[in-house]
Structure formats: C-alpha cells, structure tokens
Amino acid sequence: MSIFIRVSRFGSPAKVIRAQSLHVRFGQDLYGALNFSSPHVPWGSLLATGNHSVLIPETERMEIAGAKPKSLEAIPLIDGLTCTIGDTSLSFFVTSSAAQALAQTPELLEALDSQVAVEELPSLSFALAGIGHVVPLFPGATYSLGSAPSSAICLPIAGVASHHADMCVTQGEVAVTTREGHFESLQELGCKSTFSLPLSMRLTPTGITLKLRAGATQPPSLR
Image (cartoon, rainbow, N blue to C red):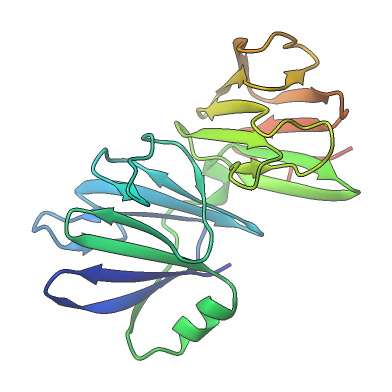
C-alpha cells in the first residue's frame, strides 16, 4: 500500500513524498527540517497495511479541520485528510486515483521504506462476511471500534454500535473501554478492563470474535 503526502510550508514550494511501508514516523530533525525516518521532535506516525491506514498524532500542536485531535488517537486516513503543525501542512492520499495522479507529479521528492518490522507490532484480526481482516496496532495508541466510518476499526454491520468501544494497546496488553456497545465479558457501558495478550473477545450481539496477538509475524487465525 502506498500513501502519498503532499507537504506545504509557508515560503517553500510544495513537495510530494511516497511512503510505501507499514510504519513511518515523521516530525522535525535537529535543525527543524521535516524528517520521515528518525525525527528528533516527533509529530506523528502513519500505520498502513492492506486496506487499513491511520494517522497517529504525537503532538498537541497538530490540527485537523481546525480541531486538535487527541494525542495517540488513531485517525483513519481518507483522501485529502490534511493536518497542520505550525506553518506546515501535510495532506494524505491513499492508493486511489488521486494518489496515482500524485505518483506522476514532478514534485515527487522521495520514497520511504519502513524502519519498523511487522512482527514488532501487536495485531488484531476479525472475520467479516466470510473475509478475514488483520489490522496492525501501534503500541500506546487508542483505536475506536464501531460501525461509523470515522472509526479506526470499522465494522459496518447491524448490531455494532457507531462507537462500540475504545482499545488502547501496548506490546503485552490491551485496555478495552465500552462506549455504546458490549462484549461478552464486558456488559456495562463505560466499563473498562485491561487484558493480557493474546486475547480473544466476542462482540455482542453480533458474535464477531476479535483476536489480538503481540509480535505476530503471520496473520492470527480467524477460526
């Protein structure tokens, strides 16, 4: 999967960067220049695989559509999503007609490869309409789960609430907070509990099973 990032900065010509990797962290280097490999001052992270891609803010200075997102909250990437930090704007385009057009632009400055291996990240799997999905989870980030398109983990089926729950993961455990829906083991709204990985949880009343595993090099079994 490719993500194209159009970078605009006051007083400088726009440039386009292509990130074709699982994890890219960006921010400023020691001299204040934009850095997409090992930033000295991190602004955020991009996490992408398959059809799933999210932006994870790591600074309170970031604004999206005039609002400040919560730090470490996974935000689904859609074409044209733009964030601003100071005098810098970054617009994101996933693999689509818009992204393909950017791939041909003379402004394309550089391509990035991942510095983070897949097996270092916890992952979540689920089966939907007979199709298995695997979503990488960035440790420390909070993922909203629900049927709303704005959910980082979107399950657009009957029985899943718009904002069913929040999941905050680390390398070895996950904290689950119910919002508008239930799990088999968490029936009260607003209930929060922390579980060790690996973990298997069933959404009610849908019966969909979510499986979380840390350090998985292969997609977790959906059986």
